[in-house]
Length: 130
Image 1 (cartoon, one colour):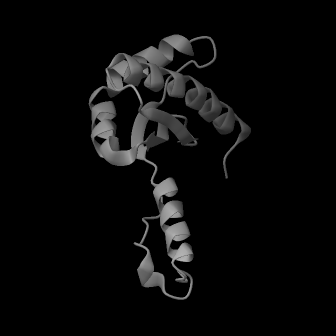
Image 2 (image 1 turned 180 degrees about the vertical axis):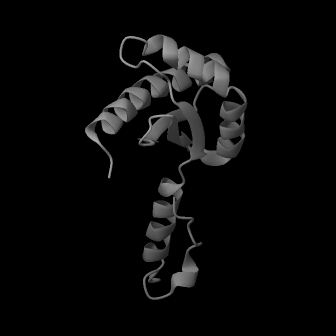
């Protein structure tokens, strides 16, 4: 169960991190790429923040996540500068690609074809629970 403090910290991180990453993508020559933070969860000891990133178009999503992991110290420092009056300690950032939009798209396509993904579970790939 997530506490109010965890939710508040996750909200602060989500808002500021979305702005930082979108600006970095625009400045880095990736115009036309939309980066959004779909969810942030913070551990109970507030030491780790798991960040779910949604990228559109998703063609270079995995490459973008690897770049974020490589630049994690710089991203964390920039985020800490922006949130220094709200957070005492900046949690460690762990980035993951959010594939829920692709999964929803797969469900819609199978329903349009007249297939039933509920009855035939082999139509859609298995998802890893997080």
